Amino acid sequence: DHLYAALPRVCLARRGAPFGEVVDLDLRSRSWRVLAPMPGALDYLAASGKYLAIAYWRKTQRSTAERLSVRVLDATTGSLVRQITPPRNSGGEAPSRPSGLQVDDYGDVLVTEGCCGAPPGQLAHIAQPPPKREGWWWTRAGSTVGHVTHLGRDAALSAGRVAFLATATGSPRSMTIDVRNLLAGTTRHVVLFTGSVSAERLALSDNTLAWTQQSTVVNVVRGSTPGGGSFENCTPVPLSPLELATLDLRARPSSPLVVRGVPVPPQYANEPPCIER
Image (cartoon, rainbow, N blue to C red; front, top):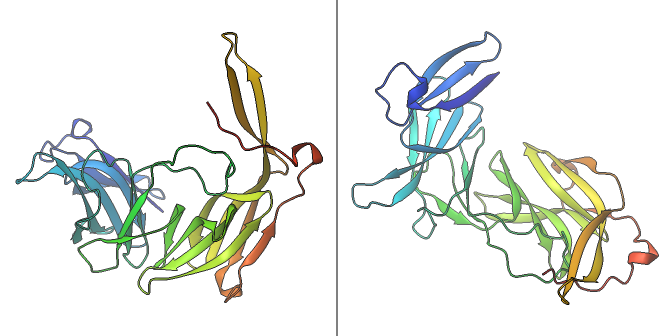
């Protein structure tokens, strides 16, 4: 029952930390204490179990460009567990912000760089320029150098595994939830969405996977502008309420769970491809 926050220098009586300090708030006793000084300009904080991870930016002695680094601290004492540097082929330098940061109970760390691609499966038949891709790198407990990995949207780290949303192989209009064992490098499909349904967000905690799902269809609206031009809008139309679903990963040892969307109403059955202008 602890909340961690980074306070800027101006909020603290002490002036010895130029980038501010990380404080630990005990929600039960309503007390707080300074845990550690900030090593640079804060990007993200993440905590799990006995670990607190800090992603921050700071100029190096050899370069004027800011560099992303990660520190893992002991959440109880504030002492340094390890300092992590990004892999060489990672972005790592501004302007690769924003980044996301996760740490699990083992001390594994997952960093997301770059943002944001279109969700796989969402408005899948809309023709549009390729979105900017996210990139990921990770370190296992004890490691000090990041390793690049390839994931999908909404990646969630827990117990050495990452769950994420991906486009189904051979079916760009379908979505899957995949789980990757980071240490072994193996990936398996645990949920397959077919038809009109797709997942929106997901979360992973040990062997429990949770996600929200909804059936939608894209309504294509065309028209003319006052200047004699034309426009085309693509509007998602919900076909079902937003639902919350869970799955025990131990219950799906091999084949994925198949989730089928509700039937598409006749008036939307032959919607043309859409190019938004």
